[in-house]
Each structure stands twice: as structure tokens, then as C-alpha cells.
Amino acid sequence: MSSACLRKIVLSWIVAMAALFLAPHLSSQETSSKPTIVQIDMLPRGLVYKVDSKTTGSEPTDDLLHALNQVADQYGANHPVFVFVDPRLPINEIWNVNGVAAKAQLTNLRFFVFFRENQKMTEIKWTPFVPSPYRLD
Amino acid sequence: MGSGGRARPPLAGEWTDPNTKIANWELLGQNEEPQPGDVAAYKLPGHASYTGHSGIVTSVDSHGTVHAMAAHDNLVGPDDTFNLGVGAAIIAYRRFTGGQK
Image (cartoon, rainbow over all chains, first blue to last red; front, top):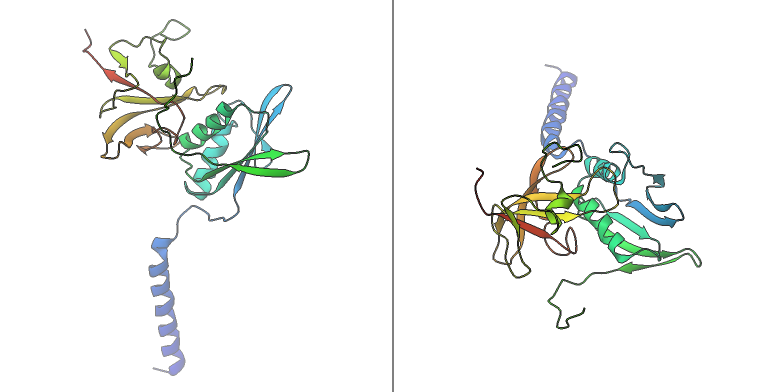
């Protein structure tokens, strides 16, 4: 057997072994370190959601849940999602988007209030729920 | 009962609503702990194609964390979002209290 032929066999074997080793680590999900940006704006016609600058609709095929499902399918549940909220939004709406993302199985969310006037933002951090010592009416 | 008068399963938002009577399923009180078999749900108001998210409690661990199974876009699987501050600020649980006649 010539050395060229032997080299070809060894090279083929190395390629085959590398493919066998790497195959289990490959999946249909892409990886992206760039976070998905969700934007919630309060307009006169109501709340508007955007996912990576694309406005969502109200149908099951184009609504916020659908868009977030696609993010989860494409990048995985732990993909970072940054939610930018209008400062005029009720806090309940922030929980609402959190719940929609949870329904879409996204687990890596961060919330920011974005002030357009000065283009600054601040992160919202939640502490664990505790029983209240106060009773409010 | 749906708007067309035909029977249908309760929607997630209805499981959470104390004003919605669901036969044989009682809402747990604030101090009652969920158990396996309970339905867990939270509301997601303001969306046209869904009213919330619901699942069935499968276990509650020693830390009080509720584990459940729920339906998602393309699978039914484990879901740990039915805990305060994870999926929502208010989670409702309902327990089966009787049999069908």
C-alpha cells in the first residue's frame, strides 16, 4: 500500500471519528449570544409588542406568543430575551409579558424600563415574594 | 359552557377566575398548599388567542416549588412556571372535589 493511500485512509478515519464525536452535540437549534429584543409600547390605539423590531399581530399565527414560541424553537429555552417597556405601562403588563414568555418556555428574561426622552434605561429586578406584614384595603 | 352554548373545557383564564364556577373544581384559598392532581393556572389578559396558561400539578417539592405538566406550542411537558414570581404574580390552583354523575 502506498503512503498516499495510507494517508487517505487515515484521514478518512479521522474525519469519520470527528463526525461521530460531534454529531450528538449538534441540534436543530441555532445558538446566538445576541439577545432577542421585545419592546412594549403604549400607543393611543393600545399596547404594541415588537419582537426584534417586528410588530406582532393578534392572530395565533402572528401574535406575541407565536413570536416567542419561534424564538424558543430557534434558539432554545435559555436564549436571552431583553424586554424593553414603556415607563407608562402598568406593572401588571410586565407580568403579563413574563407570563407569555413562560408559556413559550423561555426562561432567561431581563426587563428594562426604557426612557425615550434621554435614551436611557434601567433594569427591573424582582425580589422573591414574601408575606406582607401590612394589610391593605 | 362556551359562548355558542356548547360545552367545552374551561380556558386558562377561567381556571383562575373566582367568579367562574367549574363543576367539582374548587379554588384553593391563600393558605392552602397545592397538591399533585390540582390544576394550576395564571391569567394573561389582553391577548386575542389565549387567556392564560394552565397545567396539572405533578409534585410539590420540599421547598414548596410546584412542578407541573402543561401544553406548549409543540409539546406537552414539565412546566415549573406555576410558582409565584416565575410565570405570574398571581397563580390559582383548583382541586377536584367530587365525581361526575
